[in-house]
Each structure stands twice: as C-alpha cells, then as structure tokens.
Figure 1 (cartoon, rainbow, N blue to C red):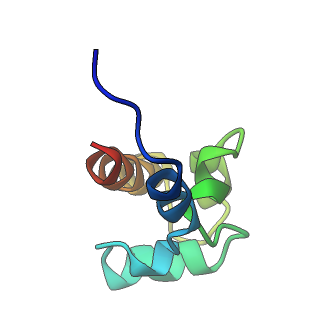
Figure 2 (figure 1 turned 30 degrees about the vertical axis):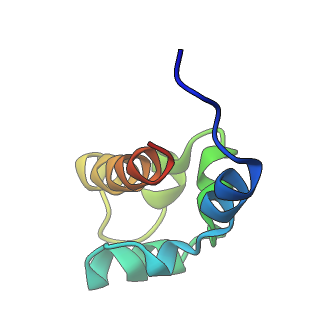
Length: 79
C-alpha cells in the first residue's frame, strides 16, 4: 500500500487558513463571514455547504463549489 503521511504534514494541512487557499476574492469573503478559519474547521463540520449558504448571495451550487475547491486543495496537499 501507500505509505502513511508524516503526522506533521497532516497537521500543517489542517492548520492551513482558508484565506490562504487559491479561492476567488468573493469565495474568500464568503468564507470570512462564517466561523470557518482553517481546513480542519471545514473537515470537522457536519455541513459546511449549509453554513456557507447562510451568507447572503450564496446558493446551493456556489456553496458546493467552494466546498469542492477546499476538498480538492486538501486532497492535493495530502497526496
């Protein structure tokens, strides 16, 4: 199988601030209006997309797009 990740690599990923991800300015402003600050906050949330939809101007498709971008970045970081 594939070797396990170094625990410090995983911790660094979890501590990464969402504002540092390659998101658009609007996506960063949406995330900034939530309680989410780090990757870990998103991954431990029960329903990130629903929380993002609470921000004015964010619907289902757009909230899912933000979550998908965060997950893709995380997967790439950990790969």
